[in-house]
Length: 455
Image (cartoon, rainbow, N blue to C red; front, side, top):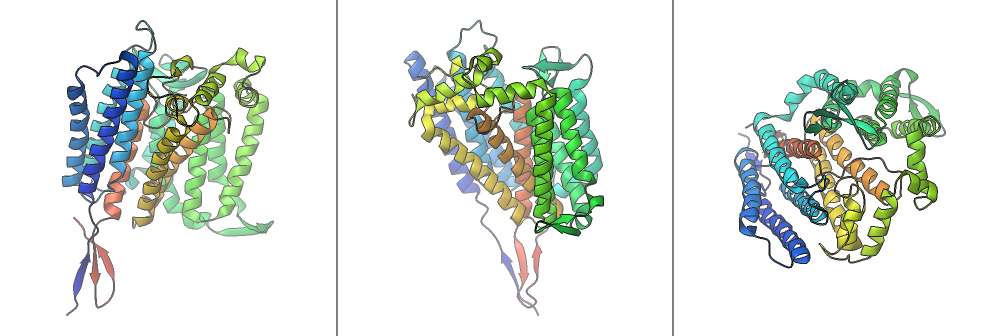
């Protein structure tokens, strides 16, 4: 008779609860610091506001404790802290501007969207009992993602903001469908690549010591390259084009484990960037702002990058303190340049601390990809994690002049309801996959075989 032992990892729900309390405490402290610096008083209704934030976080925690008990215990606290800090900075920028400004009330709108996004994440967790269900809708999600990308070009509802046509508007409401398309395309890429990875892994000729794929297998990456250029041409959105193409190349590499796909992706990206620079005026303007942000030519285009750089420089190492800088002088400081706002008031040390939260978030996502046992889950978790990493690199790189500005928003921090909905849904998907990855394993002591517990 064989002996059976159970390898049960720690759920980590108590650790998650303590980290959630710590995250909420940091957000409340930051909020009090802003109000004390601006109004020299503790904000009225602090207990009600702090209690509401804590109630939302605890409610999400209870859903995880009773329905997704083996989910990664760090994902929720990190997302809560980042979202809360974004709310504080948006509120701080709103206080620095006149009440008659078009941005009046944006902190309350962001709080409303945050609540809706958390509710959406809970709904996704309760509905999606097994992430492998999504594989059934591989081509449906691909079609939906493509439709969402093209939706801003539709007549009557398409909106152009800041030179990019990536929004749709219905009455007073506006939405950025590309944020949701990111999730749809990640699901499509995972389902497609898990089916075709054997064919895409077949080796071809060696060129300069690198084994290249066969010519007949270049179709998918060329198609994604052309689609990215089409997005760049039709919507004037450099950031989305870079994000979608980079996401596909990264997932293609994870699926095949061949560095040749990375080399091909970089060559195609460089060729696309070169062609875009010579064809599209808005790309030339972005390059001018990148290379010469303080020149008269650049200032005639936009003063955003120059003002943001000077704001971060004034913050120095330790920052001016929450509520004691002037981030409101930078255009769109609450969205595109919220990283510069944090750099001015928290300094280099504070900004690095925030970036380390993203590093930890991405690391937990990749750890989930390593731990999950099915190929679709591995590709999906890796793709979702990489999308966060690439988006953060593109945003921070643009603000700090490492690369040209692209117009993407920082996940969880920046103002925007569509971004919050998409990124909280992304966290829900990672939580569901991590629950599958960390479920108990039954080991047969006689045969040594392992089998996951099916709940």
